[in-house]
Length: 353
Image (cartoon, rainbow, N blue to C red; front, top):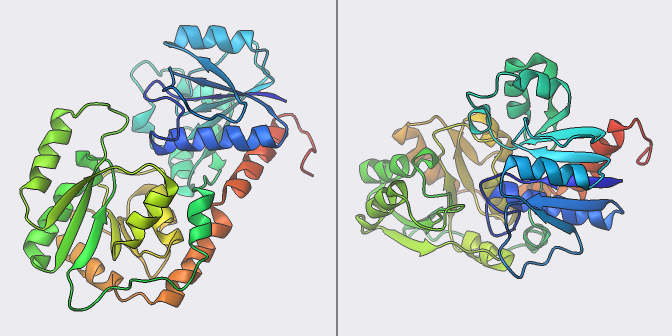
């Protein structure tokens, strides 16, 4: 099958950018290994990335994309978060939604319902699929769970690991989300100020992707972080071994988003290596957090503080069991096979039985 995988107009399909880009890159490489002839369509790439022989096509706007999709003679195309994009003459279209509709709906989307009805639609969580189906009943969206890095999954099988929190030391908390208002950094800092002052050492990642330069929003939040003596601001890490070390050097990873998320790859990564997590209870985040890790109501400083204190008491065997659960459900192999089944079903095939 000649398959196209299309990124968005926000960032190249490179592992160094956001979760969507990392997933598309990974699916493309896995499906290529499984025998698909995969073509990736992306805004211009940084130099020097390894794409495992996947065919690359770059585009600058939707008109150029439609032209290149048409010329590629594809059997099917996978569109991510852009349901109105399509290529003339392509036999089958599969939409994958990574975010809630406010990230991909626009005032120009009057015919969006028809675009969804004409395609197979998948979402990265049940909560997101339900939201899409509520807004667009003909979409009939179902779930395609994404994956996390295999190296991170393998690290999680190396048990037991240290350190577990020392009662005499401050709780080492990590805020690894993008430096955006909707990611909840103000809520977290206000929680520490009010309930946990002197009890928490917070690391904030300077994560401005997909932007290459700080915006006013980034600067305001980073200034807030720098204004607290219990906060350390550090640069984003990119490699799997660096992420593993980062998660394991903290007692708890906190992703307190104040708007719905499609899922939560960061909580999954942290749990995969045995670090407790706390997330807000919005959208698909609940599906990425396994008990006794907690999700909390947005804006509740008391609830968030209580969850931070509880996280450090999660025993190593419990963390190991959670890591096994994450590895079983969110492996690159399992996700790629699920996507391949969906592609096969577009043609009523039986390649995977």
